[in-house]
Length: 303
Image 1: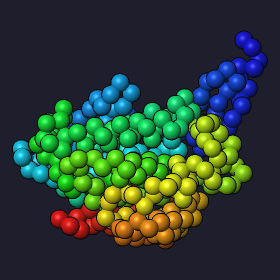
Image 2 (image 1 turned 45 degrees about the vertical axis):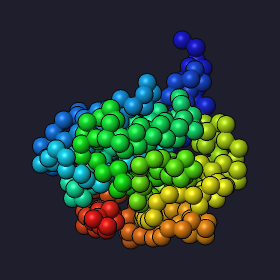
Image 3 (image 1 turned 180 degrees about the horizontal axis):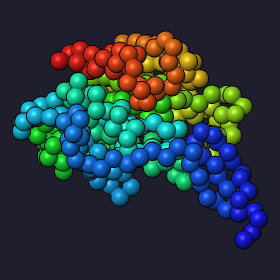
Image 4 (image 1 turned 30 degrees about the vertical axis):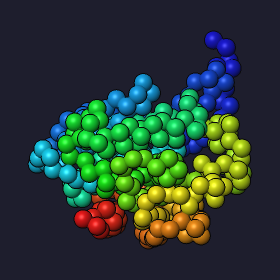
């Protein structure tokens, strides 16, 4: 065997290593969760095919009846654009509280991940997914659960970490495109991952987004570079950060950027003291409960 086979050309801990022969080895391997009934929460889910490359999972609460219309959350998972899926244990932990406590329907979009599928593929896939969901606005889309039970005039976008970045991106696209019959009321930007000028960031980003024009000119990495930022169509945005999160300042920067952009909505910043990145999907402590209630109350504000 060629000794170069095991030569590492990129080590982007905690996400992946890339070997000289092209192999990708991930540090984080999430556990798949089969579709069906979750016996603990009573939440049901099933898997959906959006396109050849894009899949999704829909979650509905226990006891939902035919024709009962509930708010819809379109969710985008985190994982540094390079790990995770809509079908794993982390996504299940992230979305079930919205369904059970918020009495909502959630559709989590499964996008292709880097470095095998470099950015902006994840964002393009996610936009395809949102448009597919919006195609149910007339009640004649391909998924019966959406046709029968989702209120597409009462839609929220949500994502944690890299998923928050994607939620922001598709919101901008929705504002530019103006999806007919599809009303995005609000957006939850949870511990967001946007880019920075930090030296270590460049090495990671060049492997997940080799076509990027650089932080100052890339609206995916830097929302301030997007001329359409103020066209986000929702009325309310909540940006959530954690005190000990190394990405906290990026969430704070996003909050300030959106507030100063000329966007007509209301943006709120909520910080959890003493906690780290996406702690609420890895623990069930008091602060996790407080954070989940804050997000659920945000969704239910106009109900």
